[in-house]
Image (cartoon, rainbow over all chains, first blue to last red; front, top):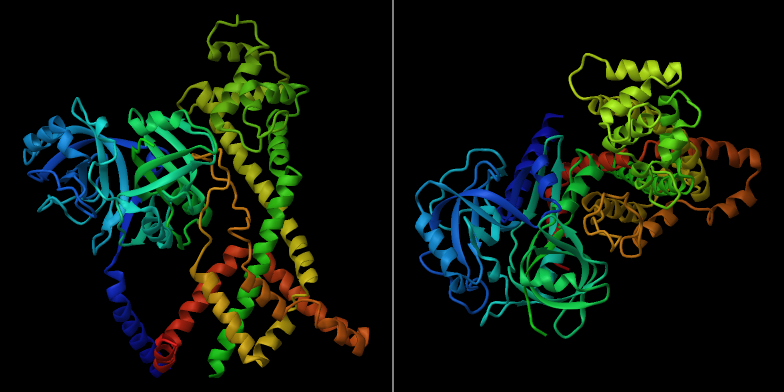
Length: 308
Length: 311
């Protein structure tokens, strides 16, 4: 019996060691249920953001991470309570917004900031990120984080809504590459009465260019428009035939365009993925406190519409 | 070796029970929706709350706030929010009072309660005049929530009864005889390995939470339904089920054996399966996961290494 126990413990240790490298590429965020309920059908979040660090100038524009965004890191203890960053899209054209970020960097004073909330495991932490626990002051503009406000829509009274456009000169990921990655990701959801834990592997492919075909009517929500659509590449071939939710932020050019569309219409867009909290809440409600592993539910924030 | 065979047979049985329980859950959900069991149980609960006061339930269900909660025009809702219940009931009762229509809802309700039959008036007086803090509307909402806890209990008991009937039906249709399945798994190592692999896949992956209604990008979660893209059972699972159960292999035995020889062991096997399947899919899913963990912990290092090598 003792021998068997020793073998079991040795095997468990071996298994842990074997899985350690894989685990280092995954991240876990534990969100309060109230937060999930509040944001699951919302496009944006309004927060009081303390800007700790910001880039001196926007990213250059070519491809991959050189996307023309301006990064800032900071804290929003009241509304978010997680390590986070906030990014201005098309920053070169958003001088007023960028100046506000630069002026408030390092002042330890919260400023009102709004934008599309985003949970994505692009920079996960080795340790669990638990909402509501004290968030340390980040050391640079890109701390380990899964929560972002990206793109920002408003800083204090300055609107940055006009940033929601395709990025001139930027080579976005093609639909096939980006969506193959999104569709292959898995998630483990573990819930209790007050919190929902989401564990997912490291993700990427921020900006994807694709064509969405509406499968239902656009639905107005408090701060934007939601619509279910299938995904096609720019050649018109179907990439994802199942329904994926598209999120449009109120007041942006893409939101104005989608409002006039109906089932079957197509829109050529630029989008960034985020975890779909509505489906996460659904998973949690269906599985009670049993952990469940399944395909990662994601949705696309539509940040630009191409003119064609 | 002996221990691992026993464990694999147990995993195989748990897996087959899980598949049958998944089928039962889907059939039960379909029946509940076809016969509107939820809506009917809710209606019973509301009749009980109203002490069967003549006409009141009809007026309540005719109220626009309640009518709008039904899925179909003219249908009865299977869910009513506490707020809608309180507002609709207060409005309906308020119309029976003497206060003018432009008076506040609270005043009209208070006046209307006095004109109700004695049993319901006493119930509502006790609810509204209780010492608990809050407005009349909040107190009516609490009253509704309390009653709905009981209604949920009725519904669960009803479904438990049905789950036993459904389990027996599915077990018989599939000829899922526990004794026979265990015997087949015990005797046939290839079949056993195949079933354990299927069980592993089922335990690791839950079906993705896909949207099924394109009209609702912000939906209230519906119960999951099988679609072609996300079937109830995968083709491999259907094949696995057909290999260990089913009537195909039974006809020969039935011809060769007398009824007295053939039936008694089957009755025992079907009975065991029925009880097991009626425990429900979540129970077997958890147990399967636990068996898998034990199996993974007890695997020989050589066995694991061999499996990891590329073909």
